[in-house]
Length: 127
Length: 386
Image (cartoon, rainbow over all chains, first blue to last red; front, side, top):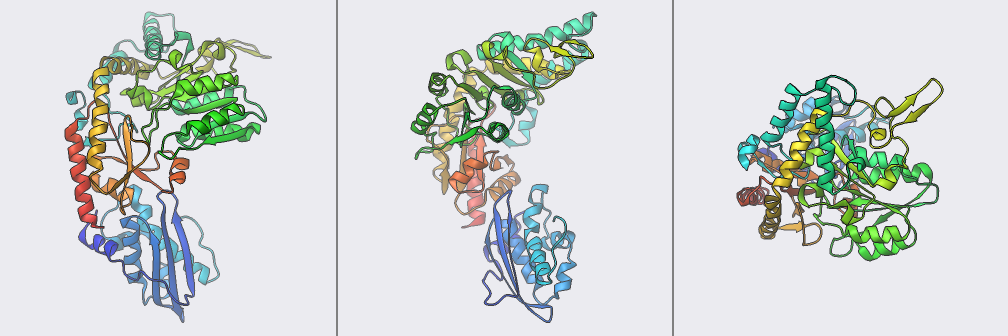
């Protein structure tokens, strides 16, 4: 599971920063293992023009958040909201064991919550 | 020893605190019973039923001897969790009583008694750890002195590996006319337990942690107490007489064994308890393994949880690497260790960590297993390079 690509994102997470004036922001925690993420988005005309995340957790959750933000930069809010868990797992690129799927999905879950909130809606259902 | 456990050819198993692997002889005893002597117990008049009942009740005798108790004081349960629920639902605890547990306790003890306190509006007191990570015995004495209707705690911590001074706790509790009930899930596999010497009112353990089957456990309740407790579940087997208007109940232990019990599992448990009794020398050697493992672990960037003196298990965190990553990485190296809160969230909260890693030992482990585990941990530190 700990392939080079994943470890690179874990050791050198992209967009691991705090934004000045984000239009969307969200903190989420995975209670079963204590992973914590805060995601921020600068949005202009419903396009994501800057992204940032801070947090702590296992290699899977950090690397997945890093990969996700790299992917989201430049996308529209609606594109992100249309992303599925399968999209996210594909992005991670290595098969996750059942116990670790939640770690891999924490980033997308947080991003969707942030962007639904930005649109004045609530995310229905679980991840 | 390892030839009794074929699965150990494929994995370095260091998670016996979660569940022990099963020796061939236990599985064979279970199969032989199921194939030749199986029927429902306490019911049929035919010879097969007689034979099954003999085995089932024979296990009760073996379990009683295992704990230094009398047969009539032994109840079969599904496991330690059910035993603790049984006690939390039948002990005479009322509004305003003081229920005491410790921050070390497994959720299987902690939660039933926390819920009992909430149900009857009793006080719920959780004893803290001392600075060295052992149970704070000064706080224990102080809190028990203020009054104690029941103290429910563990004999051997499934995280820190501390053996609690149960005998001392029992003395303090009994001075307050309280009851002491003990979770022996870990202890039964590592310590020679004598409930009379410990002076406890109830003591529970699970079959699967003493190299026996899942789905069966043993609950000792001292004779004076067991005869006063009301039923926990209703159904067949636990009754005396049933009429349309009322039901009277059987005497203990049948009173607490509603429905068809785990009969085949009882046959396996008998063999498992004999297996443990016959291997006390190997179990004693686990102490050396714990010491050796602790010494080798200390050469790595680890924080070890709890006091220095440990039995059965060592929990730790590896600096800057999440416990889940450690366990997953080790799994990829063929080493099975635990990551998580080990069903002790209050303990992990008190330590300020969400999770830890744990290695735990059984009769089948040797120094080579520790070496393999330490090598894998070293590799983990290298790969994560933090």
